[in-house]
Every structure is written in structure tokens, then in C-alpha cells.
Image (cartoon, rainbow, N blue to C red; front, side, top):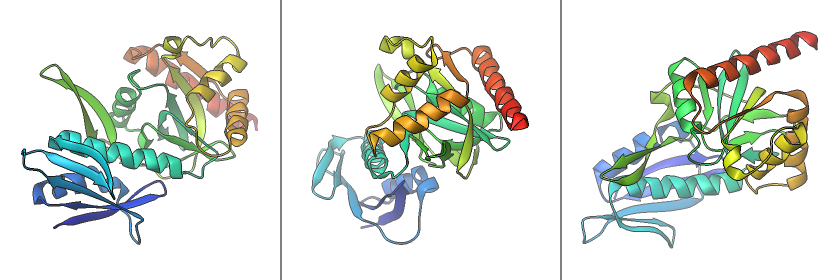
Length: 262
């Protein structure tokens, strides 16, 4: 039985057993950006069943039964990312994507479905470097750590929403971290019923969109320092391209002015 890996989702290190070479190749390609050397802690398995579907397990835990290949890959990647986020020793982790240009990152924060991945994908096509999608790790001094997980795109097929995982390096350049933050785009928070008129309110919104990992006080301190120092630009969900471009240009110019004034 082919075994692929090891892979590392942050500090979650794993291999995957497959009983089909084509599925093994698909997983190797999907997770190629997080391939690592050395040891691993967890074993996953993607095994065909009698109904011509696929079962997905993590050790003895069942993640999916009798699903197609797309859903099998999604089940495995979703679980690995969840455990990766849980394994992070960063000061805070935001539900966000991040890209970098000229040595500074723009962080795109928001819940699922507000257009984070769409915006990150477009910026990669425009020549930005990829730091991460879906889980932004912040250091104690407010920098972004690189986490080159696959990007997750939601597509509709025959009326059913399917999650597809795309190797980031096929869409743009992978960046290394840590990278200082130029600014934060906060997408679709009106859908959460949160006010964002003041820095304090924007701080609350960011805390609502942080993963519950690590010491809560450390995450709050990092976010408070970023809100005090940087622009936090509030945008609607799935913003128009020109609206997003103006916001990004603004935060990059503001960051440049901050650096000149130091």
C-alpha cells in the first residue's frame, strides 16, 4: 500500500496510507507545499470500500465513509488543518489569509464565505507572494508566519457545493516568514452584527475571528498592538475588485509612511 508524506500542517506532522496509486498521487500533489523531512506523529488512511467510494481515517478515528475522491481529500485536509491550527505555538491565529509584497503582508480576515480566498487568489495572480489561506499565525511582535496550506475554493457541481483544495505554488510564489503586517482587511463583519466604527470595536471583531488556541491574553495583546499601529479597513463581503484594490493600496501606503516616520 503506498504511503505519501510526511507532511506538516504547522506542527501537525503526518503520513497518509492509500490503496490506490491515483489517490496517492492526488494527495501528494495537493499537499506538495507542506511536504517535510523527518518524523511524523499521526497516520491517516484513504481506503476504497465496497461501494466504490473512499473511507478516510485518522488512526482509529473515522473522518468520512463512502465518499468520492474530492470529498475524501477535503475530509483529510480539513482535519489536518484543524489539528495544525491546534498545534500552533504562535501568539494568535486568525481566521484569515495573507499575502506579501515588498516585504510586508496584507492580512484578509473574515468568516467562511466572505471572499477571503477569492481575493488572495487574485492577488497571487497579480504577483503577490503567498503566506497562507484560512489560518494566519501571528508572532508576539505582530508578524505573520508562513503556512503554505492548500487554498480551498468552493465550487457548485450539479447543485451541490464542493470544496476543492489547490496547491498554492501553482497559483503564485510561496513566501517565507515571518513578515511584518502592513494592514488588515476585515471582510463581511456586518454579517456578524458587529460594529466597527472605533478601534475598540474593530479589535472586538478581530478577537471574534481568532481561533481558540494558545493563551488568550497573548492573542489579545498582539491584536491590540496591531489595531493601535495599523489601518484596519472594513470591507463588505466579497468586495468588488476596485474597492479591494483601493483598500490594499491605502494600507500599503500607510505602512510605508509608518516605516519612514520611525
